Length: 173
Image (cartoon, rainbow, N blue to C red; front, side, top):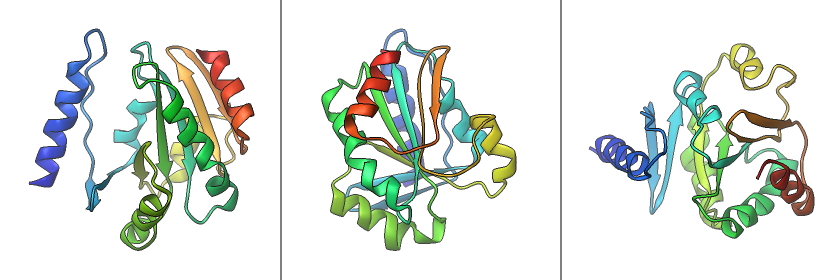
């Protein structure tokens, strides 16, 4: 039932914005606990998030709770999320945590840090296939970030300070 509600909600959300592309999103699972919902995607269903052309700038960060540099830079992504209107910029935090750690580690982390950005879990064990589809130069290490708008895209395989992240975002805006 929760999946059905999520599908309907996402369909309504994605169709509400006039002039924006309508995209079907199919999560293989949704973890939910006390207001935190984390949809789980394989790469095939996730990949569309890398190619939306609706005039919005997207900041997609690949991270995990066990990655110290990833956790250190998350507040900067949260600041971007709060300082730029949703219609202009969308921050998507793509967790690479193991699915069996979502309830014990990821959701408690999200609650404790009060993360408001959209979080999805990418659960696709065939990393050798999907990593080069994200970016042909990506070694697979995290943190990694894509900032794109339409056909303009920049990929970064490194961590950021807030000033660096905002400077790179402004290049695309």
